[in-house]
Image (cartoon, rainbow, N blue to C red; front, side, top):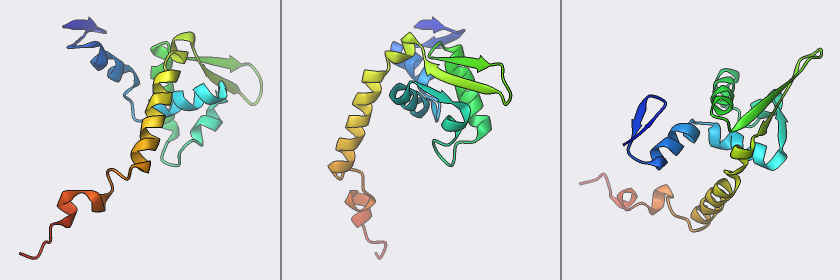
Length: 125
């Protein structure tokens, strides 16, 4: 067992998922890895279902975990920019591989509802 943040984990993968496993964290990290710096409003437009409250929570957790930095400019209106830390940058090849895997999965046609064996079972018996 590995103790981390007063929790017990069986392996490092569990720790990794605890850190990046939030609903929007991987998406936020992916976009920051491609654009380097993003403002809160830009991040908030990533997906229509991403609420300001959820974005704020995910950003705080990513900052707490040392994956992103938050730079506040003292101006009116307020300006806040987010970017990946050096450690956050280490996720780039992992996320690129995940993106490639997703592309291949879709292109292979795996996972379509009609392709699932249960989809071919008639409800008329």
